[in-house]
Amino acid sequence: MSKDVNDHASLVHSGRWAEADEALIGELGRVPGANALELVASLRPPVPVPSSSPVTDRARSTAARAVVLANAGHDRAGAVRYAEEAFALAGQTDPDTFWHCMVVFLHAEDLDRVERECRAFARSPRHQTVVPLLLARVLALSGDLANAHGMLTGVVGRTGSPLAVAWLVEVMAELGHPDRALTLMEAHGLRGAMTGAEHRPQLLAARGAAGFAAGRFRSALDDLLDAGRVLTSHGVRNPSVVMWQSYAALCASALRQSDLAVALAEEQYTAAERWSSPWGRATALHALAIARTDEHSVQRLHHAIELVAASRAQGGRARMCYDLAILLWERQSYSDAESFLDTAMQAARRSGNVTWADRVARATEAVVSARTSGARLSSQEVTTARLARAGFSNREIAGQLRLTTRTVEHHLSGVYQKLRISGRSELAFALGALA
View 1 (cartoon, one colour):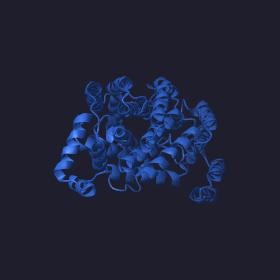
View 2: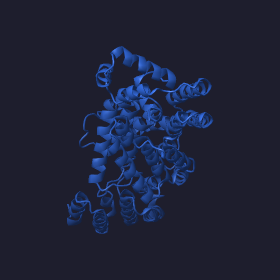
View 3: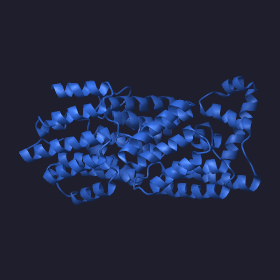
View 4: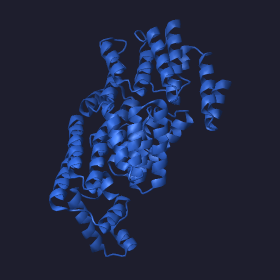
């Protein structure tokens, strides 16, 4: 390993990010392009293709520079410029260059560009190993989860790519099938710490997203924080590479670790703002609105929804609208709550998420009922529900609140009825109502 690469690792470890990036970019100028991409923390294509010409070497070296800047997350224009240059050199002939350029465009949230180029090369024999996975990712980020699921299932079946597995697990979790997603990882031997696994941070983050969707907040938070530590050790600070902080913040909120939740959400927002990522800022604002529930929460969620509405990246839109509706309901703004629940329903149906569509339908019934009957959670019901959501048993809640177990059961039954949810596992998706 060269001195510059050793310097990069040392500088990353000490938090001297700009110097670390300069050291790595300096090293890229002194190695063949075929090896340049091996030095950077990049997403690997499903089937690597050997380099074959000086032009390809130069293109891959340039693409590696684009990846370094994208990982750093502070020079979006520079990353895109290098990706454009590499694509012009060999994107049409070298699938490896094509792949890494498209990944940088994905991180820059230029989903239209990625889709356009992928469809242009869909019939190219050289590109058929990378195009389906890239197109599936575009569909997933655009909110077309059902079609993304079909394409990713095909890629996983053909290649067994760990990255394809990670992206498929994320989609399955968003579709409301987290247990099936976790079973898929087990079937591919992806369990435990996954030390040494290719694309380990993506896999950890995907498992964390599935754990969150399943209501297993403690294990999900551990996975997400591990993903963050691995990414940081590789010099990756751009939330658009792996969106782990906002999920971790929501898990921390569910576990009543408010300080950690706020810190994670603010960290992502700052990084997303630096990278000019509307989707990154939106998901961070959503997490912050839940983590720090105050008079600004409604405004934060409004802004998050506006950012997502203006972007093609639609991930989390149903949940954002749902949480805003719950907050508005608690403030007795029933017509506004119903309006955002209607938007949440449209997003859930468009993505093919039957679980979320059912949850939104029940919330709509609850809002209508509250508007007509004035039903609201009592302070005792809120306190009891918060403890249940944090994972305490009915007996433990009774001990903390000095109540009988039967009284706790009575309070929780009232909460479930008023929120139109089926039980304890869905309390995590009524975060606003418990504020």
